[in-house]
Amino acid sequence: ATPTAIMVGTGRGARSGILVKSAEALQAAHDVKTVVLDKTGTITQGHPSVVSFMCAEGADERGLVASAAAVERYSEHPLAKALVDYAGEQEVAIPEAREFSQVEGGGVSAVVGSSRYMVGNARLMESCGVALDGFALMGERAADEGATPLFVAKDGSVVGMAAVADAVKPTSAQAVKALSAMGIATVMMTGDGERTALAVQKACPVDRVIAGVLPADKEREVACLAEGNPGTVAMVGDGINDAPALARADVGIAIGAGTDIAMDAADMVLMRSDLLDVARAIQLSRATMRIIK
Ligand code: ADP
Ligand code: MG
Image (cartoon, rainbow, N blue to C red):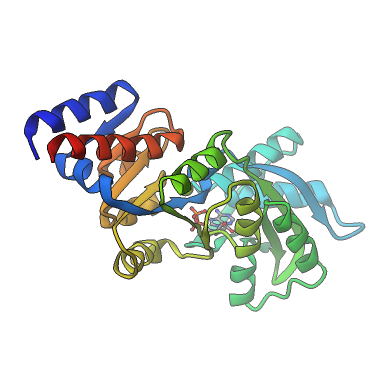
């Protein structure tokens, strides 16, 4: 590889908002045959909001929203922010919570007043022996619309469910199609449930979906894809969760609007946070390698 070609390629990338951090990354990108895309904040906007809140008939809905928000106030997860914002919109006062705890890839729990509340996904509820009952079907319906169902349990029984939706970015589908046209396989990887991920796949037609991945397992999934497939693997992500997977991929690509930790771990940063720039970055690398050869 001639240093001049790399410099030209890096400069061209920078002018279109693609920051290339190393010569190796620019070279490795020409042979990418698999692109792994994180869902939340990468394919989607990353600003989820509560689209509906359900509870048992006759239950105190406002009280439940307040308690759920009280628990989520201690979490930094984007889903937590959605619930806290929803409580604000509904103008319910959020009480104090204590004994907060968080389960990675599951949800949160805390004591509000004299009850223990838990807010999280079906996996968390199951692992704590909490039956979803009638809320299971509501959760499936929300997931089929592409929303993330968050169940609210009080003292071991599910009493409510929030459907939290995050819109797909306007160019995500086009970007996936562009990558396909370049002969590249696309994979969505998410900690969210499979039903929600499959609904998002309808709006953004990735070749494959890997759902329900725990934060600690994202890196291993990338490693498996790298071993089992021809060419190199690129990983695109925005979150703290994604950092090890970004570092493990042949080409780690961070979303500019994402966390600093993701940007530090990546080889490239997309300043426009637009997935079309993933295709552009690979094209740039291919052009650079042609000059080199
Ligand atoms: P990702 O970043 O890929 O969406 P996470 O591991 O952060 O994955 O989250 C996976 C799932 O765990 C979420 O979709 C949600 O169901 C649940 N979860 C995580 N954190 C929270 C939280 N603070 N409140 C409720 N649910 C949560
Ligand atoms: Mg994300």
